[in-house]
Image 1: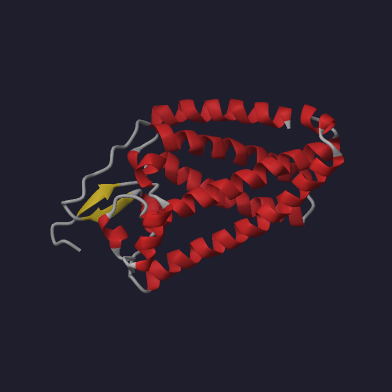
Image 2: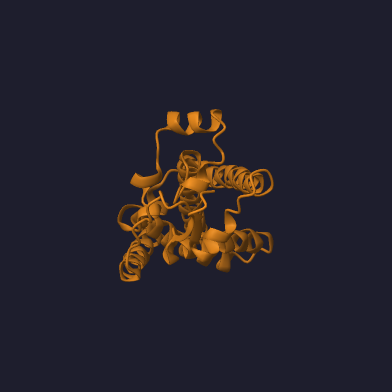
Length: 220
């Protein structure tokens, strides 16, 4: 690390809150399913949907390190990054590296698929929602099966994510968890500090996301 390194604010509060709230809610969703507390399981799904919609919008209108346009590289670039063994590069990056950016996208996709399919499965049980009334039985069965498949693949992706964090911590002496808690990172002077958006924008986006989630819940 450059001797002129300084502490830089890299992760805004909304991004960090999203990360830890989703972590807690996924664990809670599993626990409520195992305990057959389906009322709470469904409410957790509603909150997750709101947060996922927020993260998609935040990926367009949020702070620099949260924007998809800033951290999503081509799949080829992500593979080349891993093949070259440049795993020490995050120490010189304010945000995600090319491989980490794709992991974010994969996790968001799996969480969205699990949440949306779960909403339909729940509505199919209580017979509410216009889509439930018109969907053929084969479609309903497919959605129910997808809910299980998404969960299994999501667990595998989470395990891979945790393994990457462990590798960085033990082999490369880089703690990826602390910056997601504090929002700050030690970076060289040559790395520009990212632009951080006002929290007011996050409040407006979460309100919009909650309204959109409520509409989706009613529809599904």
